[in-house]
Length: 148
Length: 148
DNA sequence: TATTGTTATACTCTATAACTATA
DNA sequence: TATAGTTATAGAGTATAACAATA
Image 1 (cartoon, chains in turn green, orange, brown, purple):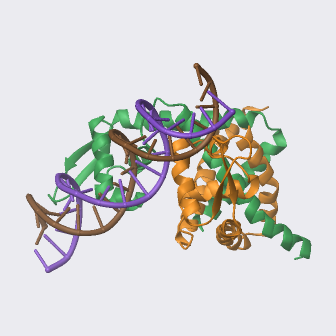
Image 2 (spheres, protein in one colour):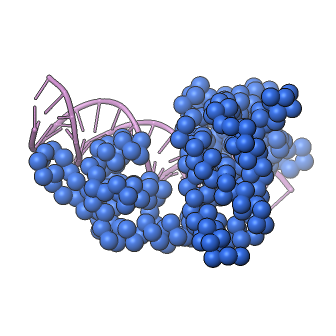
Image 3 (cartoon, each protein chain N blue to C red):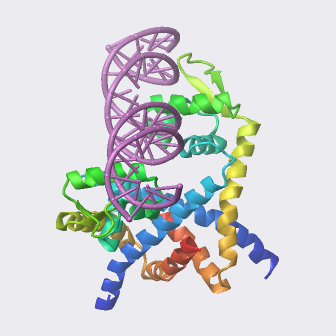
């Protein structure tokens, strides 16, 4: 590796960190600007996890989302009150609770996803074909970075 | 544009949103895991803005960071108490306050930046030359997206 | 009167500690 | 005793409303 590439790579970490963080913040803001959903980040994230992993127990959900069980209790209370999830007794262990996402819950998750994608899709259309191709190739690399 | 490309572009928004959001979250977590800095996101962000735009008034800083003035008042109080910023009277308008970052403040911002970059730089080294080149090219496009 | 910044107060989110029910 | 979940309580962060000082 040449000295130029080494310098360039040192700058790459900074440049990538800034551009990724900034775009992520923008995506959050654009989602909130859409309003209407009126669920907090954590509430929506928990619902999205249930959408793909349902059924789960509150404990599993808390572990997955890296929050403490009491925090998840409150999140679930909100989701249940809005009929987005169902709480049912565990078939064999009566200490546990089984959570399942409702049809309303799935619909809301999908709506939220579409709304977040909408802003980005619009911005992507303003790019050149080459730029989009570049991002298409870069997306899996970014994904790999975050899972390292 | 072909039908295939259209479908692919629709998926691109979703793929890019997920990978960018996930990597940004990971960067936040890794920064916090480094500990030591002991400033909140907002406090560090405000300090970083002052590092590049100092001097600023509290009002300008609140506008820039999209928080309400009373919230910024509290952030500044913490930063001043730790000798990271200085509050001085405005030379001509005595209603206003002029904020400048101290040497300690600049040092802390740079340290925080280095620490955040360190994790990412390490991950980048695990990629192939081609993958790094891809990200180098993609970074400015991501930057452009966030500013759209 | 309008503007800049602060103080007073309340709300949301999350945490730790203590408790209940069950295994 | 140990585990799953909830309730009680506290702390951090941010908001709105009211206020003081100055333009």
